[in-house]
Amino acid sequence: MVTLHPTWPRLVGARCNPEERTCKSNGVASVKELFDVVTEHLVATDERVEAGKILHSEGLKSGGKFFAFTRHGELVVKLPRERVTQLIAEGTGSPFDAGKGRPMREWVVLRPTDLASCTGHVAEALEFVAGEQ
Image 1 (cartoon, rainbow, N blue to C red):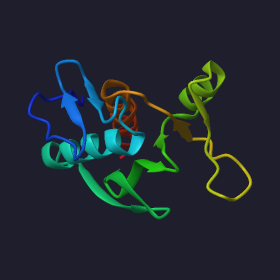
Image 2: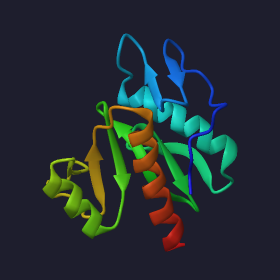
Image 3: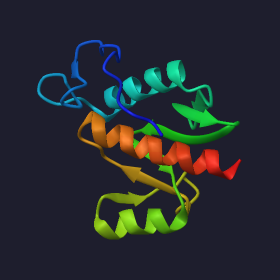
């Protein structure tokens, strides 16, 4: 399980407060800024995780399988089909289409607004992909 750590590095141009589980830059951190904090922490603390390129973006992978990345200011994560369907039905997520004209069933687009929700989505995706291995 991934947890927020009080010694997370500071974002460039943003203030992170692990106790409040938030990062702010001019009031609100971008999804990319939030993801960068999560990425830096996971790569440094979880031996299963490494960074890499996916669809012209920086992403996270475990065991050679990508599970999270940002694209167009949004977070894209790999989750079980049922969970993707649930997030879309709740209005929390939207279908991910890699430009092929049809949604990918195990990928969902999310818009986390704080460090806790970004961490939660990425952690859920990591546990899903790690469980597939």
